[in-house]
Image (tube, rainbow over all chains, first blue to last red; front, side, top):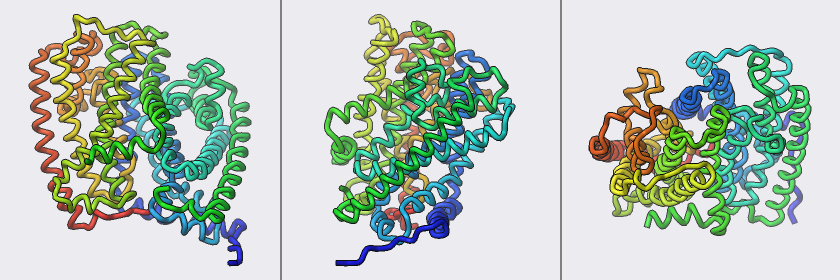
Length: 278
Length: 273
């Protein structure tokens, strides 16, 4: 009987792990700069298409702003789906997962490192879409409350990445279905979260159900805060949305931790979780 | 064989019912984004010819994503996940034929998505197709030429992916998403700024969608009059030219990129970060 592996815990070990896992992603991005074209330029062009759809329909110019903000936030959803949710499954397929589970550090820190490393490209993409979108399509931003905007963004990210960590365990347990689920969770989430139109365009109960996704409330609150008052008919007030986002963040992160622990125990006990192709 | 392999990879991960559900939800959600955008602005005037043109165009555009992603993703999947690309390259089957085969499986699932989306429109969104406007010959010829062109575009993308180390997973979707701007699927090409229009005219997508929509819905509405002066024959001739041109481009790009990937040891490369 082998003695149990004691994993290093505490904030210092967590920070070292996060740094260690984020590092190759950040450095990798500088080794081949083609991602700037593929991950920033092409999505910007794709978002522009929705702007022209609205212009073709003769929509008020405010909708162009909604598209630009929603288009910028799609980057974070894709990052969560592919660089967090599906990542452990992909690591299993490429043979790294066993190493992660054996490593004397927490899986949560490894995942967070992946997320932060991936966020370099994600944030750049979101920022460029926002800035260029504003310049090219003459979107007028008028932030009414910077503190609330900061709180909304941070809570949205915390809830979103908590959800991503949950997905990573679930997807690993699902196997190949996970990959397809990630594909499936793109357009439907763009639709129900109101990436390209206000959340309130849906009947109340659909919007309420969609609020389980942090980006739905986050986007609605951000649009209220970055556009002049009266531009958007909000789903809920900003303060209420902040409160809901805080609840979602706590819930998702706690659930992610439990699921990761469960998955780790399963991997050790059954010894099959890291089998490729399973 | 490649088509069979691709089909197995695409479809045997679950039972047929869940696979069918998956194949329906994704395209319908994509189409529904446009439907909601349209409904919000026009207060749900779905019977307008403009909406029919937008809806059918966007449904057909699903082929672009399916075929281009099918081929380019096949390269990533076989190289990084299954680690078989170098063996596939070594077998005495033309590499392009294998890649096209991988694309065909996505074409099959894509076809399912396209026609389910159109059927949904007919049943729930008042998409009406009158028999006198349906031109089967134009439809078939347009579909064949368009798909041949898309396959060549997919090969170009697949070839480029061979030479890339990073960020290739979403490339097919990203390129298809970007080309949407130049396709005239949901708005007229004339809506684009003057400096962007030449690029749209240089791509086959606008011509192909015009042919397909004319064959199904009849003459274009006033908001989509970009090709109104073109006859069906002229459009088909243009498509034929694009099909031939892109086939040559695909052959050239594949030759250059495969050589480059082989010389740089990228046929069996795994990125792992």
